[in-house]
Length: 76
Image (cartoon, rainbow, N blue to C red; front, side, top):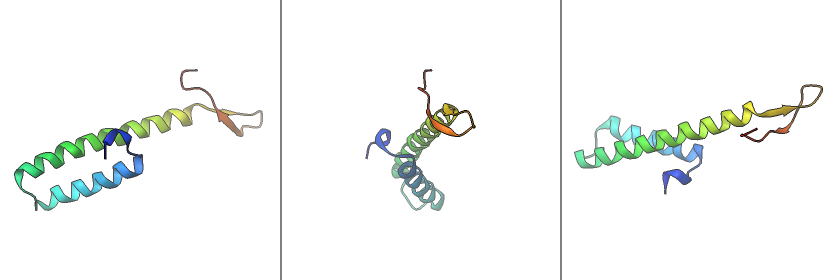
């Protein structure tokens, strides 16, 4: 699956698998390089999804009682 289309949860799950394979050292060198590159892309995706979520939380709008009522546009 294309990393850029993965949810945070799917990317994190696969990243954990990749790290486990690399730590065990049970794969040939060429495969290790591929796994490392895939892991780097997965890490970047997770970081991007976390930043996106943080920005949404930061843009929560509150009513007069301090209760969340929706979100403001990210560019607003």
